[in-house]
Image (cartoon, rainbow, N blue to C red):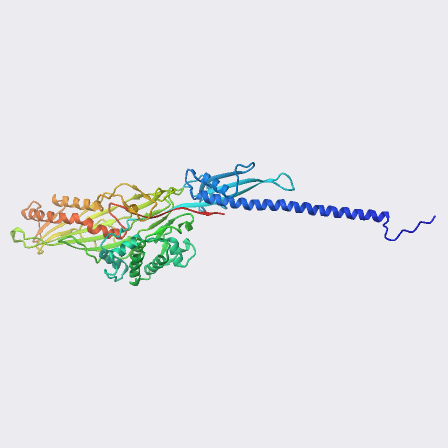
Length: 581
């Protein structure tokens, strides 16, 4: 039997089966495409939520870091409040927030975070937020977490032994000229000008900008001459955003110093690194946190002058030293310059203070001449009475022991510990070389000389008594009465006074005295010896009383002090936070 022909366009059973197979493949393919698309939506939502969570964690860590302390008392609540303000509901099912306080220090802890939880002194906050993110198509969902880490430090800036600018401007100008080799006229800068420089503030960030560098580290590594540094400060003071009450006066004084064209090509690094010579010691794990810290232009000017003079021979200070009826000459030598400090409080794991300022190491030789003594009995004429005083001052130290930042500057504070440097006072002629390695030795001094016929000589070394370590508390307000504090406010330089008074006692007791008449040494109990001693002691006593007011201001301008330690608090910058990745 013959088969009937198939109608045109009508599929055969085999063709229908083939079409159904292709349709199934296409359906499966499009189903996979749909599933992949839906999965991509869920995965994309997870990535989006992770970015949102990262932003929440970062902002919460930043907020917490601004109030971080060793007890971690305020950071958790502050971080939680920040997270809530940015849309994170910590009480929702599956959601959580964890805040820890610790320390960020790339030199101490391993990367990539460089963070150790619960380490002190705390300077960082780590916040981890977790959230249940539901899937729209792929199931129940998953937990998404993000961690933010922010570092913040309270940055203190201070000096020790630096001037209050209350000294006679003639003395300041004379000392600057001697140290810098300039010829500034004493009339060019008034007392108000120097006071304006002492009260003015410039930020470390201003110096970074003026130096044309990008970071604090680059600023600290910059080498400058004293003249270049003065011009750098002038530019920084002209452009600073810090509010300075007497800015125009301070600028005029600093411009006068810059116009003096400070000679010399010796350079120094702005930063004092690893005990080297420099102006600023920055005790921060991240030096960029010092950008908002401020320094005093006058303090920095004298430190730069000290650095320029350090290690050189003694200079004669051309200044008016008023001792009443006496005249005086003064030579000073800077052995080691002082250092300004910027940094955070506390100690390193090795037990060293993180932020330290030091006073200068200085030798000074003061020679006081009383002139002709009134006529003596026995027709001895008018002898000349002199008092040579050698002073050696080793560095004192101040360290930032703690800071506390609260809601107001008045309630915030920084605590600075102080150890006054050692000092020794020697009554006797200065050694020929003031750079000699025996700072306490001095040759016998001729105290009285009567026409070369009668002389009284003496040499004695009197160690000054140094007070114990002390601490000072400064509030967070810049420019108020507590910016300068001293460990011995009842009598500045009292140790020098006590030492020279001790010499007067020795002189009265005739210890170590040599009386010579016509080349012959006389017994101390002789009539001539008794007469001379009777005249010398009353004449020298007022000189002893005046030494503090003459020598101490000059030493303080050099950043050195005897028996006292004056700390100049420059700024407390609270909660300088930045994210760490």
